[in-house]
Image (tube, rainbow, N blue to C red; front, side, top):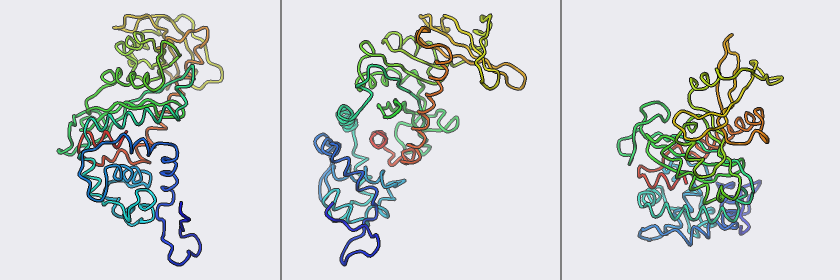
Length: 355
């Protein structure tokens, strides 16, 4: 790092202050691990180069996220004064100001997003873990990005933060330790609209469910007949929460003997059967749970095709509950990395930043 002084104690005469000391080793790791070389080789954004190349601006954008810039305008106060970081990362005497990054994001095309997806895949094949495993659980979840301003491209009304918000919806795929990928769309998207695309991403990054066990885990938004049949048709295993509580209550009427789960709160008990979810072509394993709330029983159900010989009902419940970890990833990513603050009003630029 060229013997940088980081303003600790008494700096040497003439030493420059590194304002974003955490950012430098993170981006250096990106370089040493192969990410920055992949970006340099594969990013072809159609912009005129005066002082800064498109690659320089992509690196600056990445650095701004790591440095905690909540919006592009924050670049002017947080990154531009850091001349040491600029010299180290892009070999320039200073970073481009926020207007240069705005022009970058406005220039992003669908093809550029596709280039970045290929960079993601190449980097993941070098450093990813899940694709090496013979059995892996993949969590999928949909989340919204609010964009109520009239000039945001391709927004639609939907349930994002509140019903009727305008914005975008994205479905993410995670394992317990890494991001697999995402699918991005308009604010009125629902889970079934993005399921085939996210399954395609999962197969590209991890492998075919026909040659390894890939268990898809999702909340009630994915527990519908159409998605269940899609998962069957593509040979995925799955654990999904049933969408309708009324369905859980209907299934509960078929259970003669409830089995209590020892030491569980709310008198939790279960029963199970083989049945078709309304509209599905397949008989699935339905595990129904009941618990006591305010003196009354309430019901929920989990739909799966995992064999009961290997996964009993208590294991199924425990496995489903572990899927809540995906929210522990998505929420900090949206807030900690400030990706919920959309840095441009251009649709492809928004996709690019989040990816």
